[in-house]
Amino acid sequence: MINPKQIFTWWHKQTFGTFLKTLFFGRFVGEDSCGNKYYKSKNDQRWVVYKSNVEASKITSEWFLWIHYTTSEIPNKQKKKKHLWQKEHLENQTGTPNAYRPSQISKLNNSKRKYETWKN
Image (cartoon, rainbow, N blue to C red; front, side, top):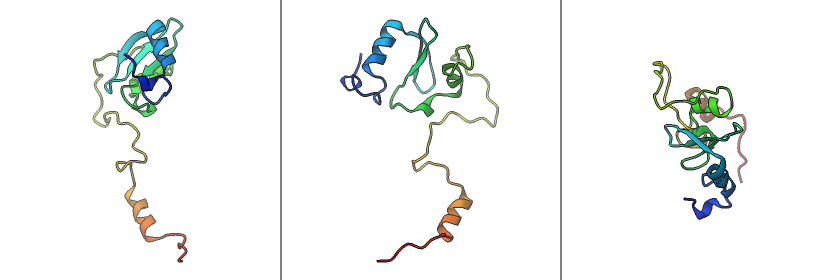
């Protein structure tokens, strides 16, 4: 059922309007490895209901292609064989301690600053 917080706030998975649209017009087509659920209407409108916080980078690449109408084939549960160089899906890490920071740039920023801070 719907959480009372979801009625007016979109950042708690879905709004009340999306809940009603899903209930009356949505046909469940699948779920990805992150737990996000994907729906489709008779008019081929496609949407996702996120498992937790709404974050667009939580959509896996297979479902990204489907939800943006790049492919009409619905991704199946059976994982296609991935190449050795392909990594598992990971949501955007920008702004977190796990964000990518190249070692050369980190050294440059710490040793050579282009400006000096004002001293009080």
